Amino acid sequence: MSDQRAPGEPLVGEVRFRVPLPLIIPIGALVLIAALAIGFAKVLLSVPHEAATIIAIAMASNVLGVCAFMALRGRLGTATMMELGAILIYPVLIGIVLANINLEGGGEAAAEEGGGGGGGGGLSVTADNISFDTDLITVTAGEEAAIDFENADSVEHNIAVYPDEESGVAKSDATFTGDIIQGGQSITYDVPAVDAGEYYFQCDVHPNMNGAYVAE
Ligand SMILES: [Cu+2]
Image (cartoon, rainbow, N blue to C red; front, side, top):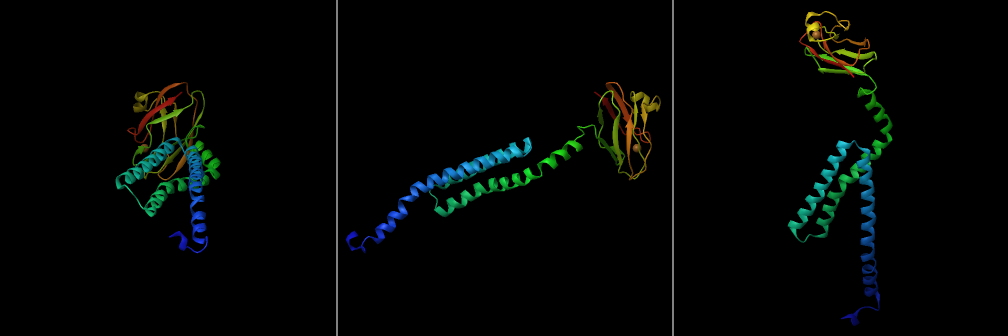
């Protein structure tokens, strides 16, 4: 019985062990949850909108999966609980690390996106396998358009703009006729400004390579 204990010692040890835990666990959990929530919010804010949705859904199903597992298994040992906790938390931690790496290079990535997206009038068209990579070229009405044309094919191509398909087929009244370039070459075409409306573009060598040339 308790009388047989050495004076005080085991009792003190037990008290030391038992008193702080009920306090430390909830406080620690709160701090951890707060850190995770803030970190995760940062992740969602720093990635593109589409990715944020996917990450949020993945995280939600992850939580759901772990909860379902715990519910089905009933009582779980501490080790299993910790493993599950780790499974839950790892994607968030990885996300937080990735987000912080992303934030550093964020400015560069955004600038790159702006240039490649064609938002600033940087148009690019590639010809390969006797076809263009697009059947729609959109330009700004009333402004000269610079089109970077890459011929990734083994045969020669160009881009010519016509008022409509009929003119293209007849190869007459061209609004603009780009120089024909050999396979493996690139060129920048400066297409004169046109009024708003729908026009027609084609490769004069292969008129079945064509599309809409829209000024808006
Ligand atoms: Cu062609």
